[in-house]
Amino acid sequence: MSSMIGRRAVAGVAAAIGAMLALPAFAQGRKDSAVLGMTLEPPGLDPSAGAASAIGEVVHYNIFETLTKIHSDGTIGPLLAQSWTVTPDNKTWAFKLRQGVKFQNGEPFDAGSVKFSYERAVAAGSVNKDKAVFNNILNIATTDDHTVVITLKNPNPDFLFQLGQTTASIFEPKSVAGNNSRPVGTGPYKLENWNKGSSIVLARWDGYRDAKAVHLKRVTIRFISDAAAQVAALLSGDIDAFPRVAAARSLAQFRSDKRFQVLIGGSRAKTILAMNNKRKPLDDVRVRRAIAMAIDRKAVIEGAADGFGTPIGSFYTPGSPGYVDLTAVNAYAPEKSRALLKDAGVATPLELTMKLPPVPYARQGGEVIAAELAKVGVVAKIENVEWAQWLSGVYKDKAYDLTIVSHVEPLDFGNFARPGYYWNYDSPKFNELWAKINTTADTAQRNQLMAEAQRLVADDTVMAYLYQPTWITVAKAGLKGLWKDAPIFANDLSALSWQ
Image (cartoon, rainbow, N blue to C red; front, side, top):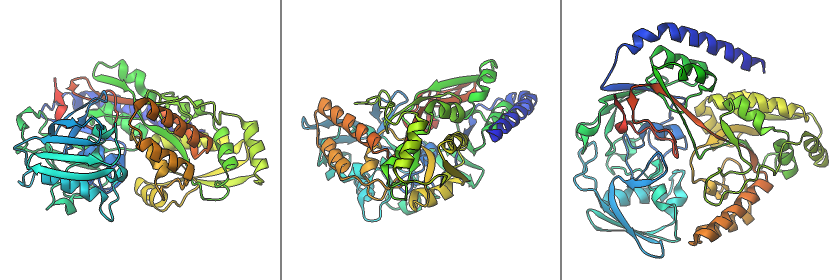
């Protein structure tokens, strides 16, 4: 807990310095540009080539576009597709594409671009994290340059939403190989500069079909992972807006300052303590349950997110279709935790590694969880790693015991059925249930099956389910068009303007 106290002290000093520096920076009044803050830097800019949500935060709806667009309130609207129809069996979707659209290299956008992008998502070697969505496509027909007819193997009520996610971005075939560092899309912004480790600059693309409606000519995105530094950058005026900022401890200060606006919004993210289900002794469900029961979710929410979160008991958030409250499963019970460890034949102290990425909620929450686990005889040895190390060591190579991370995608329950996923969970029972869910068209039946799936992964204690985070955005008062709620991680820059 001592480092948490130290962090508060640093935050206080940073805030004081920021307050002294604030007035000159705020007086600059940039009207055709903005500076946004982001916690993590993306490992690349191809949303089909990596799992990091930071990729979408930079490119989604800015450089790359999708057939549909997900709005802040979760509703779906047209984007590259101007309209669509679906057959009564919910399997065949016909999309009418927007005409006159070009990619940033001058190539035309057409039905062939859509077919290419979706077939690439399931091609051999594809690492698209939503590959299952495209695996469900039976056929893609291009009846003319501006019509795409997609036939699904199984009905999918979430299809329009999934086609608006960053993993469904439409790519230009000739340039797609260079998208990680030289992205070419149909969106309103182009990559101008990437100063690795510091910032990305996006410039308005004058060839965009509606360029005059895009108010900001240039947007700089700065990467700041430390919570105190995020607050200081806002107070000094160096940052115009910081979506999903770690500023809960400074909210009163921002709310009382007329120079700022504070937006508190919902999410469909799940913050978890992931466990490697194939590493001994975590391959024993009794040990996983013991770890989950040693954790007081409310204390974690307070320590990791300063109270801005809702406890969850499974990998699903309140308000989602078919949600059931399972927080009573593996509820906080240290005595039961100790008994389970003894029953499993685990000699304490049990030493496990806990690898923490650089996001503030993981570093702060890790301290709380380590302290709680120590009370039941589990020594969680904290290893702070950078995001690239987390992606390679934890996510890819599964070289870990425990880790803390937020899964921010709203429709990712199918990860429990993914072979070789980083949790190392392999359940024929779940796979059979998930297959049944994917072939069920009736909404009520599907929701009942989703409730079963939630109970199964809660009982199997695949991980310790912690909380649904509440996102905080702090921005200068004159900046308009920011999202309040965030059903997906995206920064829709074309919607921003100065009052």
